[in-house]
Length: 457
Ligand SMILES: Cc1cc2nc3c(=O)[nH]c(=O)nc-3n(C[C@H](O)[C@H](O)[C@H](O)COP(=O)(O)O)c2cc1C
Picture 1: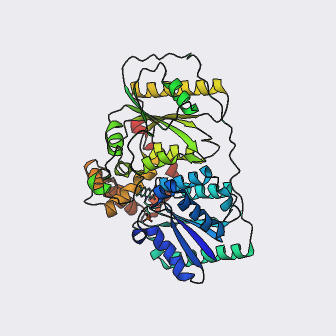
Picture 2: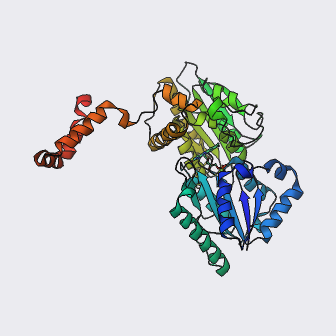
Picture 3: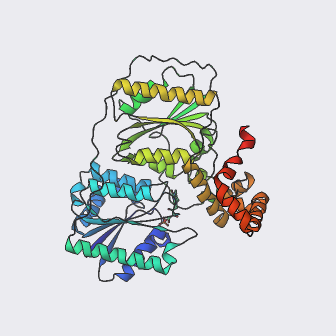
C-alpha cells in the first residue's frame, strides 16, 4: 500500500522526533511504500506555489492511507499544519481526501495531546475520510518509543489500520458537521455605561478583517469603555513564520527569530492590565495566523508571568459547537494564568443577546481589573504547572526557564517541604499502632475537615 505521510514537524526530517516514529513504521512494514510530505517545513512554498500544492494533492489522491504525523504545539497541531488544512479548503481540494483511510500519530510531552488528536479526527470526519483513531507518544523525559511494550502496541496499531484499510472496514464518524450559521452582528446603541474612571490599559489582539463580524463585535465591546485601549491587528504585524521547534528560546528567554513576537508577548502584554483576544475561526479552530503566533510564544509559555493580567475572548465562529476553540481558550487562559473574564461568540442567540453578552464580558473585565479580583485557579492551571515543574526540574536545570522556576519558588514539590516530611514520618509511626490506625480510619473525614478550622474561625 502507499502511505502519504503528512509530516507536520517544522524541523528538518533528521532532527524530528515525530519522524523517528514514522521511521519505526517504515522499518517494520517494509512491504509498504511511505511518501513523506513536509507540510510544515515547506508551508510557504505550498502556499505560494500552486503546482507544488497540486502535486501534494495528487499524492494524497493516489495513496491508500493518509498518515498525519505531528508534534503537539500548544494543545493542538502546529500552526503550519493548520494553514495546510486551510489551503485544502481554499483550493477546494477536499475531494482528494474523501473516502481515504487515515490515522494520526502525535508526539509531545504528554501535556494536552488529546485536543490535537481529536481536532485531526474532526478534520478527517469533515473531509469524509475513514479515520482510524490515532495515537500519541510521549517524547520528553519519559520516551514512549524506547519502551518495548509501547513499540508492540504501536506495531499492532498500525497492522490493524492496514487490515481495516485492506478490508475497507467502515470507521465510526464521531464529529457531526459544524453548521455554517452565525448571527450577522449589527452594533446597537450601548445601554450600559461604565462606572469606572481609573484608566487601565487594555491590549486588544485581533485578526479581524474589514467589515467582519469580529470587527463589529470588537468595536461594540470597546465602545464607551473606561480602558485605555490599544488595538493590534495580528494580520499587520511582522510575523516571519510559525515556530520552527528550535527551542533556543528556553536558553535565551526569547525567540531568536527577529520579528514582532518578542515585543508583543514578552513586553506589551506584560505592560497591560488586560488583554482582549479576538479570534476569527477558520474551519473548526482559530486561524492558522493566530496559531502560528501563539506557537511562537514558547519562550513565555512555561512561565506564569501573566498571573496578574486579566483576559477576555471574542470569537467569530462556532466556538462552542466546534468544541476545539472553546477548549483551546479554557486551556490557554488556565495554563497561562490569565484571569478569564469570559468568552463571547456570534454562534448563537440573536443580535440582542450577543450585545448583552459583550456588555457583561466587558463589565466583568473592568470590575476584575479595577477591583483586582483574582479568579480561583482551576485544574488547567494546576495540571500545567505540575507538568512543567517536572519537565523543568528534569531537563531544564541551567536553562532560562528553569532559572525562572528557581527564582520564583516554582519548584514547589511537597516532598521538599520539612513539614510534609515530618507529617509523613509521624503518620507512618502512628499507623504502626492498631488503636491509632483504627481511630484514624473511623474519623478520617472529620480530621481532614478540622484542619480548616483555624482559618475559618
Ligand atoms: C512551540 C511548541 C509547543 C509545544 N507544545 C506542547 C504542548 O502543548 N504539549 C506537549 O506535551 N508538548 C508540547 N511541545 C513539545 C513537542 O510536542 C515535542 O517535543 C515533540 O515531540 C516534538 O516533535 P518533533 O521533534 O517531531 O518536532 C511543544 C513544543 C514546541 C516547540
